[in-house]
Length: 136
Image (cartoon, rainbow, N blue to C red; front, side, top):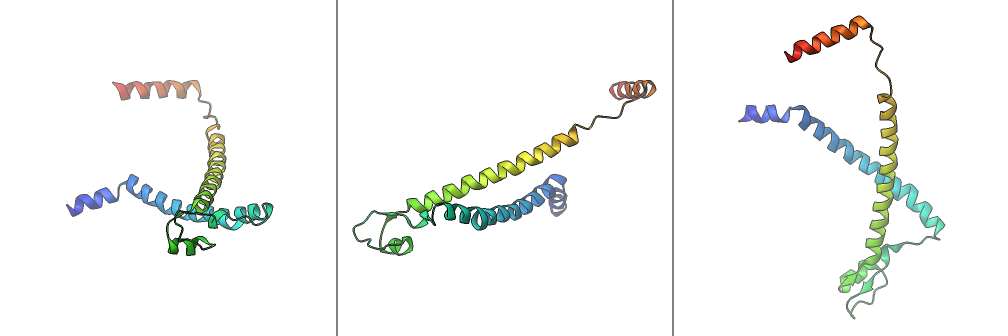
């Protein structure tokens, strides 16, 4: 059983998946930093420092706090500002990923656009013979 597990774990797909997860986590951290440290401060400067994260609607009359953290301690609140902030962050991250993947696809298309070398008539015949031998 241990031998089978080792064979399974060392298959190309499992290793590729592990590498993809690790790179994805690192890329996620980069994109999160880009959004939090570069894009959101620019949006904040444009909107005059507007921050939705502390906007909430109290669901209890006992809530009298002015910020979300204290309001949650006092009772039930509808933290719609926090939800709106996370939604905006998601949209920005999704757009950045779209731009990156689009650029990668363009590079991939350029690589695929390289034509195959022109075969001589003799090479074409040999290729056909090879293909026929594989079938038969």
